[in-house]
Amino acid sequence: MTSSPGTQATVGRTVTHRRYVPYSHAHYAGNLVDGAYSLAAFGDVATEMCILTDGDEGLFASYSDVQFKAPVRAGDVIEISATLVRVGRRSREMDFEVRVVGRGAPERGESSADVLEPPVVATTARGVVVVPAPSDEG
Image (cartoon, rainbow, N blue to C red; front, side, top):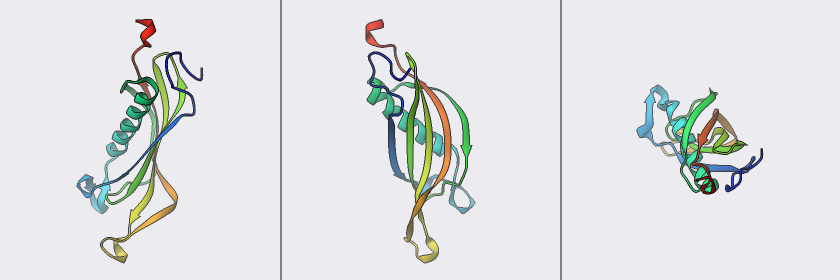
């Protein structure tokens, strides 16, 4: 099914956020950020997707196939996307990706940074959210 009645959810729809990773989130040597940071970002784009498509924040039901492929560091600029891959009556399955699009370059100076071209894929996952039943179903 590519969409569900009473919803704007359509397979292929994508939501993207960008954010700076603050140094207050560094947990490990080398200013590494824990993997939970990416998962929280996935929750944010999934929430926006549900609001746009169903007028409700939805609830996360599960993650599957989470892959940590490259580090995320404090000082990075990341881009987080959610793409709808399956639309059920109440469930929305999405593919998620965190890409590092900018990274600090302190070796050139305290505030130096580079745009990463191409971006570095840091984290991927698949997740399922659920939304309330369409109002015509009671």
